Amino acid sequence: QCDLTGWWENELGSRMHVSAVDSQGNFSGEYHTAVSSTQKPIQPSPLVGSQHLDEDGQCTFGFTVNWKTFSDSTAVFVGQCFAGDGGEEVLQTSWLLREKVDSLFSNWKATR
Image (tube, rainbow, N blue to C red; front, side, top):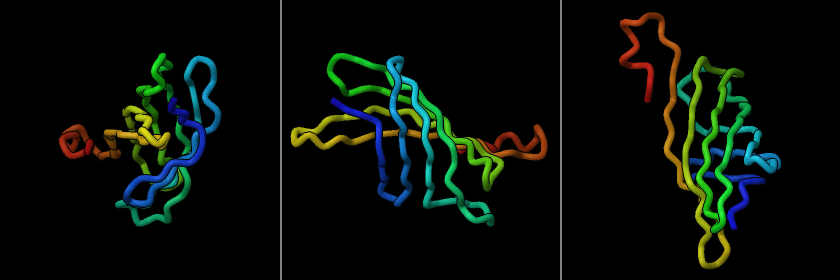
């Protein structure tokens, strides 16, 4: 069964820490990104999320990261936790990043 609690690292070296998941599937933590397009120093950023608690333990989940400590952007991640044959847990995610733009005219370039 997948347990989101603890430290996770992706192939680019970004890491996140998920604090305890409550009985409703809600959790919080910190995201430590290894990549950024801003010129400011990267700082750990708060995350909040929720997971779907199910019987087989391979839960779906989503979380939001507010990069407020060094950027004017917000990211959302959705994914699923997979439990491998050897007990290893793997998170597969997709994400969207919304950057602040100066006008409605620039809206087209604000989401990656």
